Length: 223
Length: 240
Image (cartoon, each protein chain N blue to C red):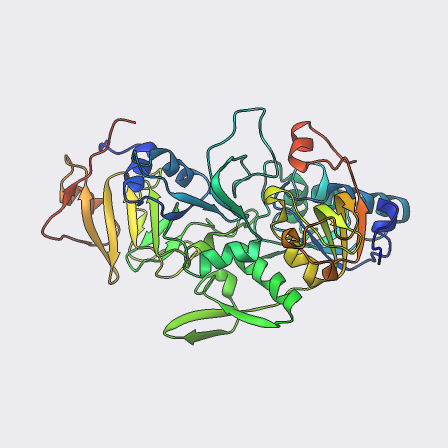
């Protein structure tokens, strides 16, 4: 079994690239964890699709106000400078390119930047939420994900096989093994776990990795 | 001018079989539970209105609100972005048996279609869903080198909304993030019905604080002790 980062460590790494006072949307579930790992001295302004800018942490249990929730329907609090707005305005912020960063989860990411993260096929009840809007909104659309599926198949692929969320939209992928940029339809390896060879990483990646001269070490704290 | 009506039954009068209803709220935030339950009461007493199309971001949670409408058999189709919730049984069971329809719409597209409906814009182009299954069959066009999908407006016969303050002319404020889709729906429906936590006289809401101008509102009923859907859910409430 290859060493790999925990979800918290992947989230930590993604958080290091978020600038102070950036406007950021974190997808529901795993991406929400990124908010916890902002470096000291940096405070992003978080957007939630249902109509809040600059929300903060969850309230203490018992203090919830259920008119004050995030897109995942979890109770949140407000930070100084928060604002409410309606859904059309909220998605104008998204589609209009006013967010600096969106961070989403993925079932598959393709080397051409296509993302599949909303449907695993025709079974059950389909649900999309704001994912298809978010991938066309932010100036940077980043994905955080395990490098492979639970049964060991690559999640970074040549072309997505699952229903697409968006076409050519992802710019950077933070995985349990590496940090990879998508440039001109190729996966460009920026960082990898120090103990991991390029060959071993390539073996669990479904499309060719482009190797720049410098490849950084992907090092995170124990989390 | 006085758009207030005396009670919830009067507020939901005249809603007929087969109508399209927009219902405000995102999950429980801003959900007009009392108006929905008044409509369920009428359905139980008279068998009408049924065969409804309901537009909401979600498709109900637990055994109250929209979920209770679905349980009661009033809803033929949901138009929503995310028909899942903590307890989505009501919709899921009927959907998997083929007893309820679903038009799945990306959330921002849903909001913009409603906005367009209220603004008299029959169609618009959005990058959202381009190249995906949800754009199947829709016209596409290139603008400035990028591809976009044409989406049509969405209008309704009736909107059921929850406001915080309403004056008698229909000017509205909302509580915290509870406004979400409601200001858009108020404009997109022919008949806009509002439950307000407090009804005040014209002039008592500072014009700078009005979120939905009264022109978009037709009926107002005061529900002073309005319940919150999520709080009811957590108490295990069921409207059966």
